[in-house]
Image 1 (cartoon, one colour):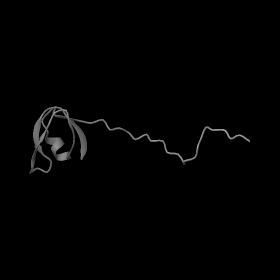
Image 2 (spheres, helix red, strand yellow):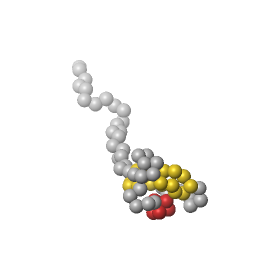
Image 3 (cartoon, helix red, strand yellow):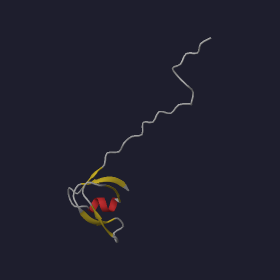
Image 4 (tube, one colour):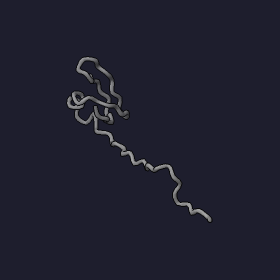
Length: 67
């Protein structure tokens, strides 16, 4: 399942059986099966935000110790 932006309202089934409403302006995870069968222009892949967290060892940095 991938995250997509819904561009226009449409109905579809993630599993091929249960029909859901997909509303324009929302982001939803869609199955590959549904994404392949969505109406033209109805969805586009959502931009993925890369995690750029800074991980340290917990020590303080940038401070000078006085003697």
